[in-house]
Image 1 (cartoon, rainbow, N blue to C red):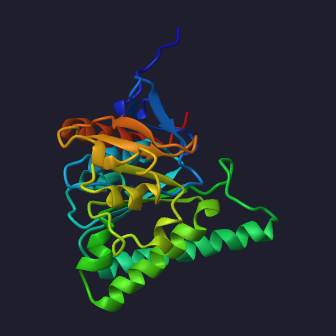
Image 2: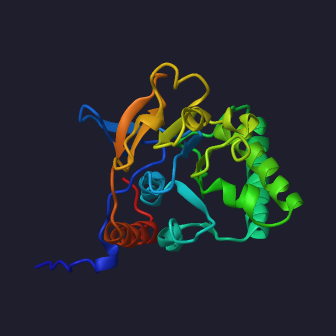
Length: 275
């Protein structure tokens, strides 16, 4: 007679996601789910303090944490917004521009290595079956590293490195998601802003600030984040598939939700099980 033994708790298989799956961002004004693929894309989001940027960043990071084909590189000058994901991040950078530039140089080297390998095998981009993870690089508050901390040379180096990673990283499987609460031309210059294929504008104080995120001209066409009421936190205009800004509300993760997801992701990454 055979007997069965229950598996140890750390052996239970758990379902994972993939960075090649659409990321759930929230719902639109008609109640439909907003699920957007971000692989081979770069996403810029901005808005005034408290408008909902960090909420949406956490949704994207949560998807990355639950994706076993994702390597997470998190940059957070305040440490507390993305800090809860530190245990499941491959790289975490706090308020240290020296470390930030060092990590971006490493990311640049990895990007160059991937392109050299793609050239060797006559391929143009990384795909889901390749034995390399998608790298999700999330930067909460670009302004901290680009205009606030460090020396002028360090800030300029940060912007040069970031621009290169954004410009060339997509086909190498490197996704950059950047957020700022100061959407102005000195923080996000046109040469950098135009490299982002996807944009998400939360409440802004002026039409010009909204246009800096979405691109010039949308406010005149009736798509301005200035029109979002101050109390409507988490509501933004998403410019992604379809080519027209889509009003949406971000899904909300509480601190306890995030702690639970971090523990789940830690289990997932320890078992290495993939759906």
